[in-house]
Length: 220
Image 1: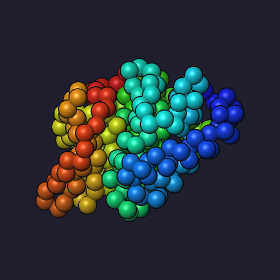
Image 2: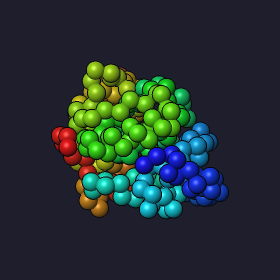
Image 3: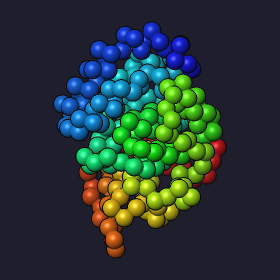
């Protein structure tokens, strides 16, 4: 996939992208910085050419290997909760997939680290990020359950895959005062959860029902 391949779609997608942003507003996304970031990122470049025409619909789309690019609403909502109206410094994304959410985060954080366990998906994401000339994203091949201890702590951690409980390694890598947003649970009983780390405790807030692919261990 290249930017050249999708250039025609990109040139005609501004109106479609604007409708997506208006829909996000109607769904309750209020953070103007998040909305601006979503409007800047060409979502059609992160899916196959056959699906590009559906890129701005409010739906998850397959990206191969049993993985999906999340609904625009899910991305916007999780990033809005993570950001909490503040500038972000170092953010970790677990389950990078095609790279779309990492690119949205790159508009809102100084540094974005993204872990993807499937090497082929990671390679596709790297090509897209490189073609978009984004310099503040570091894409890593690895097990998201383990995180990236060598560059922790993170003031924000976001999981794009569901897990029964927050991985202990990720909790440990969250900075004091930091926020983690994740889908917790399995199957049809998943909840979007916010975890805030304080000096001596973690505070948890359940936000809404969601549906994500599961967070799997290891690499592929």
